[in-house]
Amino acid sequence: ASWRYAIDLWRSDPPPAAPPQKVSASTTLDAFPALAPTGDSLAFVSARSGTAEIWVADVRGNGARQLTRLGHNALRNVAWAPDGSSLLFESVHDGRTRVCRATLPSGSVLPLVQDAANPTWSLDGTAILYTAHNDSGGEIRRYHLTSGVDERVLDMVSYGAREIESGAILFTRRDDTGLWRADLSREGPPVLGRVVENTAGKELSSWSLIGGDIYYLRRPNLASDYDVMRVDAGGDAHRVASIPTEIVSPFQRFGFALAPDDNAIYYGHLNPPESDLVVLERS
Image 1 (cartoon, rainbow, N blue to C red):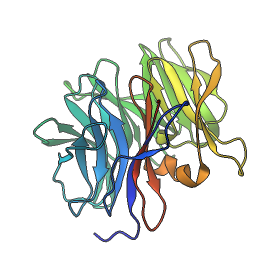
Image 2: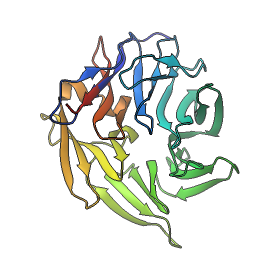
Image 3: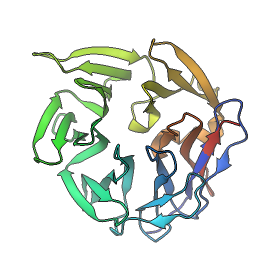
Image 4: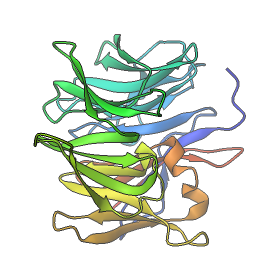
């Protein structure tokens, strides 16, 4: 595959912060960062081997090694299992999108569901949530890894669902901005409520969940930088970082991840003709 632009990973600190640091600097694609639950490993998609594959490195991007060898040209939305033993990812092959699981350290890949996107793990790691593509756009489904049972969770066009507690999920909707919560524990239609008014878009990569707190992107106006906001358990929003617009403009397209200890923000950055994987970290 040929690439017109390089996309790399960067890391930033919440304030007080040092300048953003380049984590990867290949001449091709490095994007969709995901931090291991232990906070000591970084998984990401890279095309440095010629096609997009999953690579794993330390949190500074050192010691990167290729995990998968699929030979595909489109991988995205990497997610670590709660126990750190495997990774979910989205693969596009022969015009169809599917969710796969890669086991560490072998890199063996098992396709799970077809015509699916935005995979995330259940809290106990026994199932995955994903967006199933259908004629109406998409619905949230749950696939149980042991039994293979695949069930509908939310019958509406919604994306990026993540389990936050037994019987409740957070997700975004196609026709509404912001972040929503669905209580699925009761009989009948799910109880819905908006948690965040505006996450600066509906892409999965525009928000993250760490330790029960929600982090999301906010851009007050088109002339301003992006703010990284944190919503605590009480529902109050606080700005934890500000990232220049020229750095973060493709933020949502190429991934957004936070370290488990809330001390670093990782994101993919496209800035032709040269771009990187970046980290912002607390000094």
